[in-house]
Length: 322
Ligand code: NAP
Ligand code: GDP
Image (cartoon, rainbow, N blue to C red; front, side, top):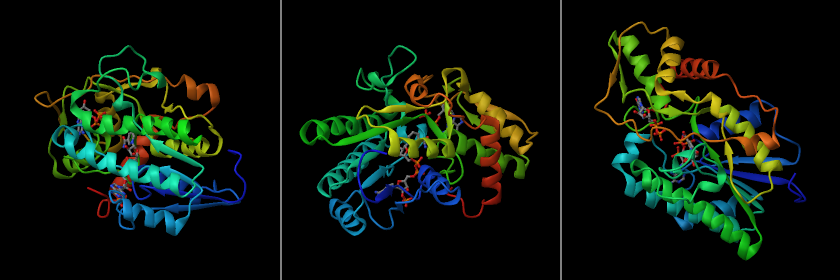
């Protein structure tokens, strides 16, 4: 535990999203909820966190002692390329509103969420936690990247001025049930899952965007949820921590395509549209810090996690976000 006394009331912003729903499942359905913990999962319907007033009202109502801050404008490569300004402004407002409300309402710990796609584009590999501010991010998502980097700046400043231990985690590409499966706006795996599902149903080829050669480390939302619980309860640094599978588990986009094709038993043609962007060619992250703390943590095998996500999407097609 982090040394605080009394019951722990955890407010999860973005509680209705991919990562929020995974944390909810691990906490509520898989018996990870501990005695003395109360969990509140917030969605944008209850409070628009772009508004400082609505944010304060949510903190006033729930009076959290701890916050997991997930709420953000989130999207895949192609949405980022179209909307850098929106990603910057929305995320800067949301983050400042949440962190400042946490401070004003006496929250002892906040765990916010960065991403490995905010690191400098021109860098040495593997990337580690010390390199966040070492140069401009990839041009495709500079709005999102700079907004996220400012969370780290703000966390350091809360520590310097008030001694608060607000921290952040840095996950790689997340996927799982309750993802945003919108083809135009979403990330690569949910996009591929939706497209493969439709290609199979309609007997059409699967269109993959880009060459398939870009490298990514994928993390299953339920694994990430378990790691979030550990960070909330045990991790005591202000410095962020990368939550990732190892460098040896980095895959090409083509590997991801193959896993989805196999999970659906898709037998049609697969076309790589090289007129579309590959985005950042790699952003290989090092998980040595995580491994120092949790040497035995077991990640779900990639193919199994992809299969579970494809099955979930097919079973929930009518109601899934798409
Ligand atoms: P998501 O599924 O799109 O969920 C986003 C969440 O943010 C939703 O619960 C949404 O609420 C909420 N939200 C958005 N705008 C809001 C607003 N103005 N006011 C209140 N709530 C708002 O995204 P996710 O993948 O779970 O992402 C969670 C966190 O992980 C984010 O901070 C993201 O940057 C980070 N992350 C994601 C990935 C990835 O690959 N997905 C990788 C690295 C880091 P409603 O649905 O109720 O509108
Ligand atoms: P990123 O990891 O932040 O770049 O974002 P994404 O999760 O959107 O992954 C983008 C990578 O997947 C690029 O190399 C794209 O060329 C490739 N890709 C292939 N097919 C798709 C697709 O259907 N949707 C998306 N978003 N990316 C795709």
